[in-house]
Length: 317
Image (cartoon, rainbow, N blue to C red; front, side):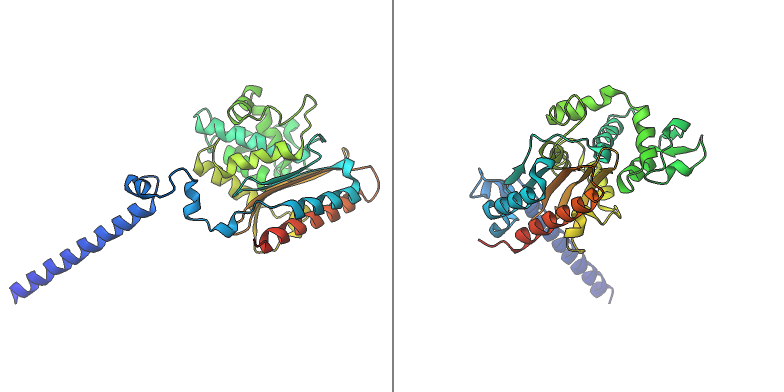
């Protein structure tokens, strides 16, 4: 009986070893970043490795019908006041309308600040749990809730970043902005090639602004965990107007919106995570001071967003 028990144990150990070995072998074969054998067996070593996991039908390059439809739509809505950029992330195919139109970014300015702050954290000069104190000139209750707190309240940098991106909190923005140096923006501009992000007056356009999302999606500026954290915050916004209103509720949208009635600007920009077919869409509108300018901006953005979403989700070669 003892012999049988011992023999059974050895059989169990042997079987377990085989399963573990097979498991590691499968993981090894599925990870092209560490599998030199798989790379050497790849019959297409000069082609993007992502082609091994993304089906051919999800590589869309023909945007001509969509481009013409958007041009007509924007022309009817006031072409001189709208700048649009669309990019299909799998292929880089894009549509740019009025890239020369520069507009005041309003709350869209919060995203480059967030990226610059997170870069400071990565470099060790700041940390997510470092605290900044709310001062009187930081208070702005027009957007967000942090401005309702008592002066002297300390918030962690992580809390300020989250409130600024999720709820577009103005107080969080002003608190962070006051505590950074203008040189803290240099890495974002220099390392990402974003010299044209803003002109001398601080205005931007849809094409240049969209590049912020590309560097987040590819994690080419921040580490993957931090790019993911920023995109998670952007996808948690409860703002369901503008471009979000033209999307299916089930699709994830990591976006930053901005609006300023005094400057008459209405914007929305982000990544629409259609399964296997993600894309960037940015629309910026300069209003005309009319009473219904935001209503018309909302209607145009909804129509644009729905048109793009329908094209991408139904496209077949």
